[in-house]
Amino acid sequence: MPRPAILTQSLRGAVRRAAEAPTPGQWIAFALFGVTAVAAFNLVANPAPELVPTQVINVELPPPELALVETKTAGYWLEGRIRRGDTIGNVLARLGVEDPAALEFLRTNATARALYQLRPGKRLAVETDKDGELRTLRFVTGDGQQLSVKREGDRLTAESAPATTEIRWQMAAGDIESSLFGAADAAGLPDTVTLQLADVFGGDIDFYKDLRRGDRFAVVYEMRYVDGEAIGAGRIVAAQFENRGRIVRGYLWRSDDGTENYYSESGAPMRKSFLRSPMEFSRVTSGFSDARFHPILQTWRAHKGVDYGAPSGTPVRATGDARIAFAGQQNGYGNVVILQHHGGFSTVYAHLSRFSPQIQNAGRVMQGEVIGYVGQTGWATGPHLHYEFRVAGEQRNPLTVALPSGEPLPPGSRQAFAERIVPAIAQLRLAQQVSGALLASGE
Image (cartoon, rainbow, N blue to C red):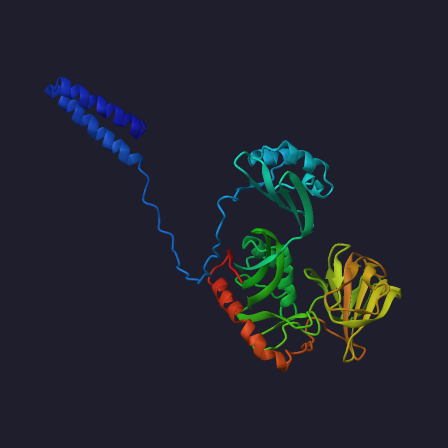
């Protein structure tokens, strides 16, 4: 089928020829051709697009900060991204820098050598005069240092200092289809924030056993910026998880002594005295039972713990703050760590491949701290962790035992807490209105 543009040219030609000699036969041919052209054009026309549902969300933004610029001294700022295979010379040339003296300085100055460790995607900003002479250069290195090169007269100087970090809030929300990590990836949530999410709600939700398709989460978290460039995620500020129709919310509280904890709006602790699972993500391969056929002893006997299947080397974390009662080898347990907790509670972590270096000379561990790694030592037929939860020396089912609550928010801090979480509550409500999306905000 001819394209509409070709038909239009033919139609113009027919009109011109008809005007020169408008015989009856030509008028008939012209009329028939015009009908054919219109019919062909209608066949290839695109149908009207379907309207996409939209939602208007009004958010009050702070007014921009304005500053006077001295036009006599103002230079030209340009910014670029490092590309694969770039050299510092390539980047500066692309940004319009024509300054051999500056290139020689960057090549020989010890402080400026960080510029020769360029990673694709990193940002570099330069200020030049009208002739392309370098006035200022700014670059944030991979270790969070800001390199600044400045020209003062004919002299160039370079200095490196910790970058000034700006904290902004970002929001994300998602629906669980198969796993928490899958939903978090779909929403653009950084892995470090996903792990925090599992930690905040770890006392209420077993993220292997309790998750269901259709569960939802919303989260507000810190993102660190240097000169407008995101350099990494910080702490979760507020989060909500809807699991099997039950909604749980948690908010960050930073006390005056620098400690951080999460509480509900009423001040109840989100973090229980114990985590429900000693590993962030794993599967139960053998549950708590009074009669289980032992694969090595070939006899029926009680299994007073829970086995978690995981690859060798998977980190194992302490489920609660504790004193290290034992770390070594013990018969069928193999490499085992026994922790003594407050209130007559103790926990056992067996069949470890090795212990964490942090506990070798430590007397105590904190909740969530890595104490060892999954292995196959002792009476084990495959790599897994054997975990026991004991109350006054008696084993209880770790999956069903009622876990003691953590310490509530001190009464003297509740008023300040209620005031500080007001903006976080508003941002969390906004995040709940979207799913599978990442939104930027500000603090």
